Length: 536
Image (cartoon, rainbow, N blue to C red; front, top):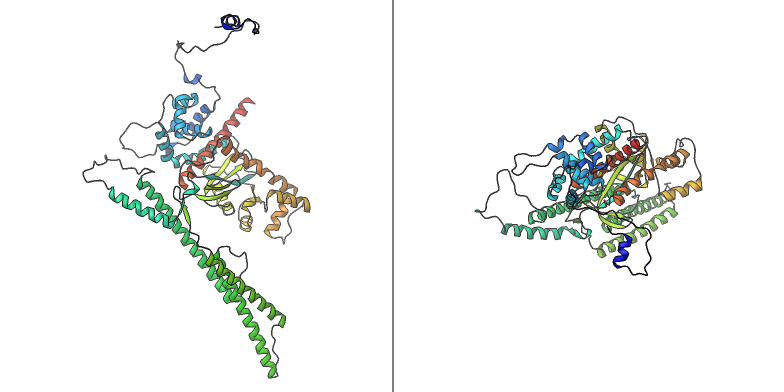
């Protein structure tokens, strides 16, 4: 130990300022031997998150983790409960990389306590997450039961929202069908040349060859999946276009002009312009024929009604406009090349999503939470919008609650303007408040028109009824809860735990990962609740 005086005598100049009284330091004794065995329970305090996760896993229904194919050669597997606790604790800490989890098992006291000093290899951890994806996702219901037992499953008000997360794929890897067919032909030729010779060693009994992701066989599978997706989308689009064309032709045969927003795609716009032209031409022909019949009847001394001349002139003007629109639609089709449908060859299940920061290749993650920010149901979708997901998510919520044995009734569902539609507003289910416009527009309308009171008018449309409810004091107060209920959950996922991209590819694997993320999030909320209860 070196004191200030010794340090001054050892090398400080005589004119240097003194630090004052003699001061000692606490120095590490790295060569000190322990006289008694060390217990791992002394490494972490009693209320540490790792102990809580171990206690929770002991209460979860982990029987599905033991259902795995047996008979394979090799060393004994790790205990499934230990691996489950390891993965859950890592996800609670925002750690999903199997290599970083392995490093934590070597250096982090909490990971070492969970594993009891064992160090699972990163490949073992990754295979456990992949092989047991459905069993791990099934633990979400068991975790929800624990939250319900702690009084955290409040169903008086729930909020629904979605967020976009990137897939394990790049938007630059989207290719059209022709490119994919060429690559498939190349790989087929390559694999035909690399067939295993007859004298090659056979696989051991019970062990099958595994196609690695980067191998020609794995790449060929992904390319075929992307090609099948493009062909299915083309077939669905063609069927939808044919249905619309038949409906439009039927309306045109009855002399009715189509209503609604005109399509922007050039060929669909051309079909619409052709129908509008045919309807306008038929209308002019009918009016002119009626006028000619009136003139002939007048020559014979008979009386017959016919459209007034002003209406005939209006119909002729409408026909001229339809002719111009049809010519413009023909020109647009000739000048606009056919947009080839594309699919991602790295993760064919992912889609291009629009976000505030731009475009990303990913999925639309949906979740329903309550006042305690407990995720009651979660689902991953390929839909770029939210409007078609309201009813599937409420159905998923009812099924999840039923599986968890929760019989309480949902009183009110909150959703933003992305979920607004007349079908969602009138669908059977609990009461709901769905914004009909963006929040800032809704607040501006409320300031301009003022608040309402009482029930909606009996003759109000679904839109008018919802706007009336949102402007009542009760509706305004209830809808204001939506943002602080659901937004912090996604903020915790993306900011605190740095979960902005899925690590696995394909919709089933990403769905299992999305469920595991929120299972870990619910355990964190349950842990905080227990900590507050003990400190109170």
